[in-house]
Amino acid sequence: MPLARLFKKLFSDPASARKRAFLRSLDLFRDLGFVELGHLVQNMHSRTYHEGEVLFVESDIGRALFILETGRIELSRAGADGKPQKLYTIQPGEFFGEMALLEQLPRTATATAAEKSQVFLLYRSKLESILHYRPRIGVQIMTHLAQLLSSRLRRATAAGGPPAA
Amino acid sequence: MSERERQPGSLLPVLLAAGTALYGAYTIRQALLPFVLSFAVAYVLTPLVDAFEAKGLRRFHIVLAFYLVGAAGLYLLAQTLVPLAVSEVSQVQTDAPVFFSKVQHLAAELQSRAARHFPSLRLPIGQFAERAYASALEQLQHIPAYLLGLFPLLSLFFLVPFITFFLLLDGPALISSSIQAAPSRYVEQSLHLLNEVDAALGHYLRGILIIAMAITAASYVGLLALGLDAALVIAVLSGVSSFVPYLGAVVGALVGGIAAFIQFGTFAAGLKVVALFVGIRLADEALLQPFIARYSVHLHPLVFLFSMMVGGEVFGFLGLVFAVPVACIVKALLGVAWEWYVSEARLRGHETRSCLSVPYT
Image (tube, rainbow over all chains, first blue to last red; front, top):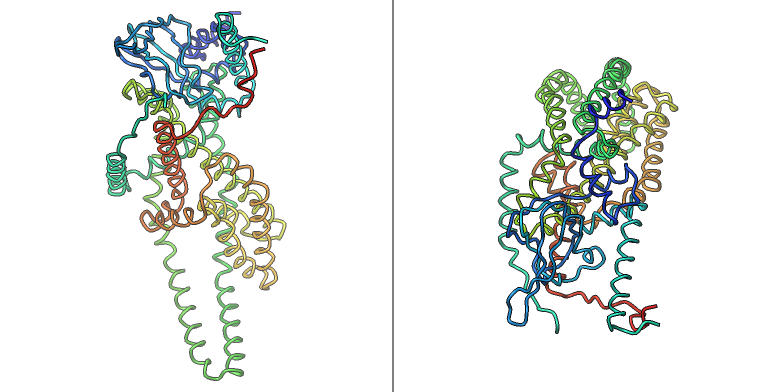
């Protein structure tokens, strides 16, 4: 309807719509509704990292989940000789640092922007606040994190880790 | 130990910076006043704006709509409540001479009774009554001057909505800018700090507003039921005073009790009003406080008292209003500093889960 389109053009926020569309494209938030995504956008922070900027350093205490919107982030770990060894390059749409949402443990790798990158941050206490006030969103995120952990554990077990019963 | 032990940095520079900032705030406190008030108003209104923004609307349109609706609401309120308040105040002014004559009569009666039982007290009581009466009459004459003295405060009625408009509109952008300005590696810590302060301040300010509104409404209904003429003025006075914790009920009981005594001429009427405010205070403690305290920062009564005394001493009435939120912020900051210290120095163990030895199934 032309009237609805005009209303949308006049009153809807294009920046928020872009963020919602991006977050909805992620597995982590795929089941969230329009308004729920709006609440999620309000609880996340966006930051631009320039090439070479360090997001966090190995052994820093983690307190946030990072979601890469644009750019590339390189994960590396100090080798036995102390030199950084490249582990993985995060691509747009992937998230990392998610264990910080469950436990405040030291980061196991260093994250550095390989090029100018736009990153969403979901801080631990914001997730706690979401869980408290908007449990449906919080449960979706926690369920997905639990599934992710389970998949990793299953893969580690299959690769010769602890025996599965 | 498999993990590297790290020593947290010195807190001295942070404390020095905080001290300098506090001293700076004290020296420019007059200029800060409209900003502090606007900040508090914006804090209370932000969740409402956020709720509409989550539905996909532009923030500018939401804030503008809020202002238009607010202006219309204020206009309607002014049309109905201001004439009522003015008539109530005029009634109090009309009744004041009657009240003073009653007080004089009461004092004379007390004086004669005291003179019968304690002849030596006759003179001091008489002098005290004369002085009190003269002082009250003098204060009554100064009322127009007091009202004129409030005119500079009127500028706040224009400044506060103006500043609040921009805070509501650009609040999230300001936070984003500060996160962008933070050193990249310390963004997580900056967010931690912002979130804790936000939670402590937001919960307190919203809680105290709910209490103030509830006390105003309950007092108005209760005073109307008791048949008090100045019900609205006393209810509003009590509600505004309740921005200083525990003061609302005290002011309501005191002013309402005197007003009831003036109007009905009996102590029993005054006592009924006092009982009403005691009831409101107890209801607040039993019904509202548990709900509000669930989300607020808990302060020890001594910390509470100390912050109120310091706030009142340094910044006057506004210091009393904002002493507790500032104490909440300080407590949140100390909590963050302690949490950093504990996590950075690895003081807290993490392997506390049971069933770790059970195989993956």
